[in-house]
Length: 355
Image (tube, rainbow, N blue to C red; front, top):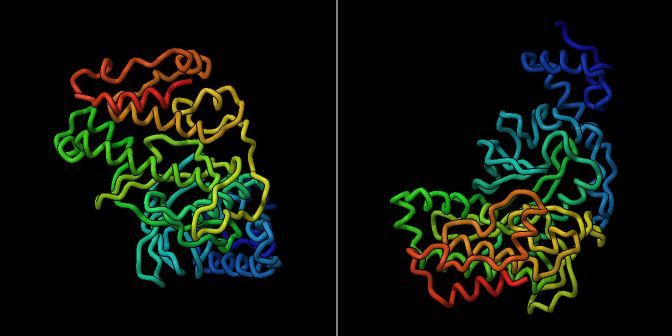
């Protein structure tokens, strides 16, 4: 097709172009440098025209331009931050690291600081006000949980399209879930590296991270092996604080101010069923709200899996999980008699899982 009209490109940027025409224009853009540059200029103009509220105004990142909700929002940048595949601007795309329910994580190079970081942004097609607000709270909250065993956040900002993003430490390694799967498969290298003693040290570091969060009035709400990163250099980092909630009164932590979010009201209710049911406390499954005790229960489930290499629950429906939770779990030393589990660790595990 011939180059689209200026009106068509404007409508594309504003997200008002008819679907059939949008597909044709996007196909054309793939092969037309001049039109891509024109769209990039329109994007920059749109972003610059957005008012900049005060720093403490929650709309600083929440009220993104209309393009933020469209799939092409990150594919048409030319001279600024981009995840389109062409490395330009401060962050150069190196590859995708993974996707979650709401976010996508990419490996990028920060060309100013000459280092590789992970960049998280809201998934294309997601991004109503509540989700954007929740995403911003996730970045702000994680950044303020400064602890050796919690993933550090470097920057929170807007992409040229208006979408929020934040960058964090790029950890080279595996999730605890991956390590447990390898241990169950008797992988020789990881079996040697992650002895029962090493797994005990990993668990202690997870506990220290969660205890610090609780001291600051934060409950993780989605603690599970998939949300623990084990780095190649011994790092143990609790990640994915997207479902975390401020609950109760925070204790004063010396040298640290209280946690502050751009909106004092959380973007979701403590009674929402959000998280991974297999690792939820009974009160979460019943939608009765959460407390630090909910994370303690999840710690018990994680410890059970570390001790036995098997999940404490079979999974299934919420009703089935509640029925399992009502029963006393099979003691780890009975479940895995060949694992030589210390009685003290078994007692800690069963205490955490006491309903």
